[in-house]
Length: 294
Ligand code: KIV
Image (cartoon, rainbow, N blue to C red; front, side, top):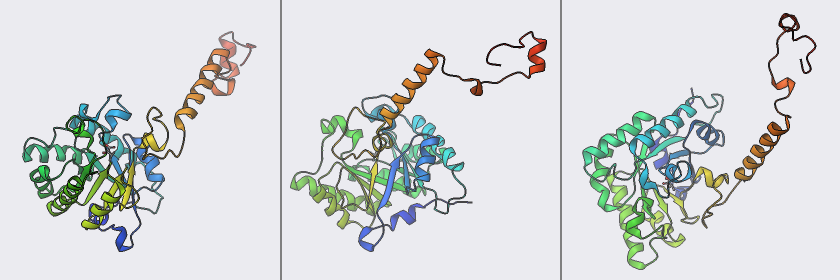
């Protein structure tokens, strides 16, 4: 049976120690998880970005623990049925703790993290720096691996005044380094750095012994993460500077659906070989003998 990459194994993946950069991609359902696995990624993030790229919301604040557990379960089931013959380990599944699921009490935070683990995740991710330390410590104490998330933290969209690059000024850059060290000391096994200048991401990466995983944070991190729908060009309305599209599945999908619609309208689909048929004997008893297309 194929085993998964583990949080302790991810924790040791510092590029400065000669390790390969970590590859993380989001996925929200079973086919997405199987594709990510077959592509050989190290980690799957069941991100709260599901709110924006799948559920049609304008921000990530609208999804709940139940929503994330629903998608985490689908990802876990997809991986359970993914190619058993591959020699590589399965990706580690990290589920996002959504907004307000870890902002009240440590007990709430542990219970919500446990819901995501029971749904099939092997670790949880949460946003924020030193303010979140009691929650991080509580979840880690409950034996649940925690991934931190610093910089542009989308759950703070209103507090930040929009989705804005963070850490551009001296004080803000130093605060990010201090936050990363605090997250590491609290037990985070890795830290996502989102929307920060390359130079600041390098400072943070140098300052901690856990791997940093960047998105819009330049090439100096210990790994990279992108959103599934961005990598594949399924989401084509916005193209942030940090996204590289490796396919144009939106155009390919629209063209395929339009071809299907045209074939239905002209009668070209379904063809005889795409239909079920009676035997000639049964057709004859029904008076259908000799009908065209039989
Ligand atoms: O929800 C998400 O997709 C994320 C990544 C952008 C890191 O948090």
